[in-house]
Length: 147
Image (cartoon, rainbow, N blue to C red; front, side):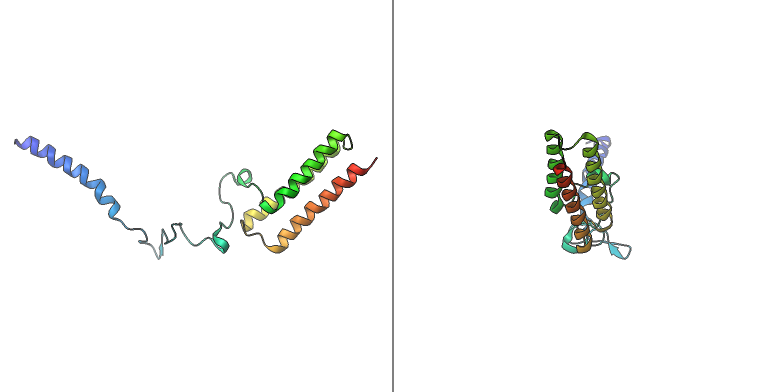
């Protein structure tokens, strides 16, 4: 074997050995005074109650929040009532748009609470949002009942 061939083989072996040595680093190594990757496979501190995120830190957080699941059925009911009122001609377009605007304001309230509390909505905020939705539902029913 020529020295040139031996140099090429040594370089090839070194190139293959470098990626094999990289996985030798173990998870859980300290990063400053705290682990950068904890035992549950999450970065940073534990997420809080019920292991859910405490807020939405995404750049497009307004569009990524689907709404709290417990309010979705009531929101869909209100939307359906407004649409039915427009079809039955018991609501005009302007009144329907006003009611949709009120529903959107409640959704914005939900998003603000989500930014603060994440999925762990406190009881008093939950009751406030539920009361707002029920008031709007009653307003839709009263508006549709008017001659």
